[in-house]
Length: 494
Image 1 (tube, one colour):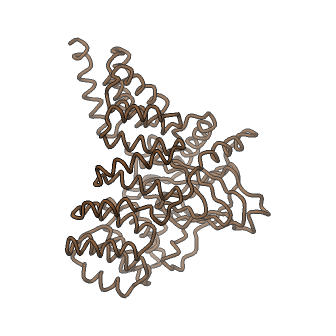
Image 2 (tube, rainbow, N blue to C red):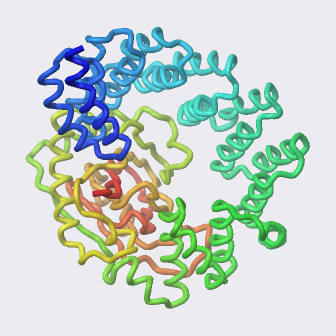
Image 3 (spheres, helix red, strand yellow):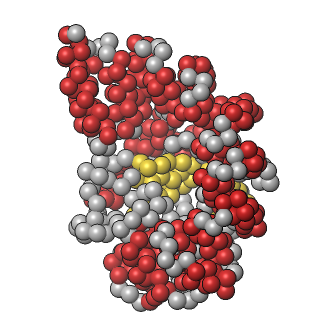
């Protein structure tokens, strides 16, 4: 009773802090608690989540391990321990299997075990686990997506979505399942297959707003602009962010950017704001609106930093990164063409060379942020707090002969980047600007006559940073390997 009385109030406060996104406050509450009450499994579990929220992965692994030691049958601690070790680049298959044994029907345990198996070289076992689970629970949407993604990145670009097809046959009245299938297939730009999913759905469900939006999207993105115009008119009463973004892209395609401006500006007040700002950049540039310079910077908000690495450090990093590129194909939603991208958060890993890289990058990010102009309310880059530096993602890209990135933005980030680890020799890469980064380049499929803001030459050890809302692409190169690291800095909340 004394232990419960001692720990209850801080535990409640720590949970509240975690829910509010203040992992730093939770750490302040929990560290003295576990020092005073070292056998409180719940406190150790919460401290693991707090450290994880702070991206202090080594401490998070240790906290979850202690929680499991104190409460070995606690499913949440077991899953979290396995997942955190896996994300940290530490062996985790045995722990993931144990967590699954504790909770064989728990979706989080199943998904974590499958992801761990695949990440540690047991792709067949991962696929079998997902297939077996989905045979019993075909409506498990996250499992369907994980299985399809595993197949796609493994090189199956024809039958990767067959799990969705089987599930929709088993559960023909499950609308979310069909829509998830459509969204996945639409990412491959196989418009015929996507349309068939919608056609079959309408035969089962009849007319649905989601199907109407899907048809508008297909027509516009496939270039059937006459049909898109008719469908946009028919769906004018629908309030849907996907339709609104499709309308913005349609207006850009058809040379009428001024028609899209109001809609895009309205979207900046929604969850689609990061994408809306990127399209407003194009709209304002095309219409000669000075707000384009307000948004992107004049000159653009670009930082170039040549980081200082000791002899051999970049090669050590390159060797490590090459070992992490095990996929056959990049993820569907990624910009990579002719190469691969790693899956787990790179900066969570525990290798000393990764810690060295991360420390240098954090210092450069702080320098970039300190050099930004004064705060501008409402601006996606300048209008946020400028406190703690955390990452929304970190990864490596390995491009091969003729590889490149299509023009894209990073809706999950605040500041985005490219750091060059290894490049082909100049005579192998090709004549400049082969392999260079282009900022401000519109997506090719929109057919816009806009020049890039800048072209930047890659060099080993060079770090580039720019707003996550800014369009960027790379130029294909002749031959060799172009190995880089990239990250998104998370939008600060305090």
